[in-house]
Length: 360
Image (cartoon, rainbow, N blue to C red):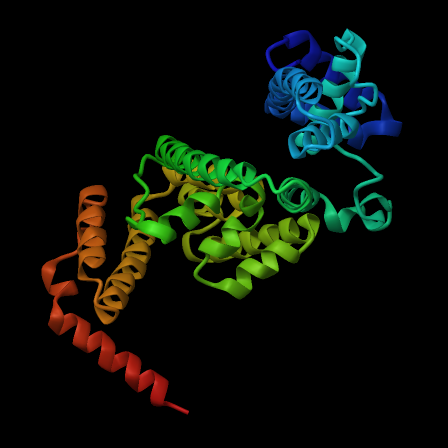
C-alpha cells in the first residue's frame, strides 16, 4: 500500500526530482502515499470487495431458490447481471465470476473513476482544474440516486433507504465525535456544539456522511453565500484567494509588529493554514500568541451569545441554557456571565437589532 514502506516513499521523492515530464503526477502520487490517502483507499476497496463476495453468493442462492418471475427472483437476477454475471442458472458460481463481480462492486461503491458515468466536462483537460476535488461529491450523490432508483422504484425494496438512514445517522454521530476529538487533539480546545434533537439531530448527522457530506460545510455555515462561493469556486482559485488573504494578514502584522519580530509570523501562520484544510488550521491555533487566541475565543463567544438570544426569541430556553453550560464548561478562560445572557441583556440586544433593521 505504500503508507508505511520507507523505500516506496524514497522512490517517490526520487521520481519527483528526476522525471521532469511527469513531475506534477509524481508529486500527487507522493503526497497521496505519504498522507495515507492511497492506503485508506486501498483498505476501503478491500472491505467493499470482501462484502460483495457474500452479497453475490446470496444473490445467486436467491435466484436459484425463488420462483421464476417472482419479485425476489427478478431482484436477484437483475443485480447479478449488473455485476456482470449473466449465467446465474448454474449450480455454483465460478471463482472468476465472483472475482469479476467483486471488482465491479468495489469500483462502483468506492466511486472510482469511470469516464462512461462521469459528465464529459470532468475529463476534459481544459476544464479539469474547475472540477478537481469536486467530482467525488457528484459521484456520491449520483450513486445514492441510482441505488435508490434501482432498489425502490424498480424493485420496491424499502429496506435499502431504511438501512441508508440508520447507517447514515449512526455513522454521522461517529464522524462528528471523531471530528470533534481530532480538532481537540490538534488545537487543544473542545468543540462547542448545539445539543440538537429529533429531526435536526438526524439532519446534522447525515450532513457529515454520504452524499450529503459534500454539502456539509454549506449546510452548517452561518454565511450561506460565502459557503456557496467556496463550494463552486475551483480549488486553485480558492487556494489563491486564501494565499492572498494570508499575505494581507502578514503585511498587516509586519506594519504593526515589525518584520524582525517572531510574533509577526506567529500571528500570520493561521492565515496561511487554511490553504491546507481545516485540520491544519486547528493545529496552527497552538502557535497563536495569547492575545490572538483570546480575541478568537471572544469572537466565538459573541456568536454563541447571539445564538442564545435567538433561542430566547423562539421560546427554546432549554437549548439556550445548554449552550450556556457547554460554553462555560469548555471555555473556562472566557466564560459567559449571567449578566451577559439574562433578560436585560437580551432586551438590549433585541432593541439594537430592531434599530438596525429600521435604518434605511
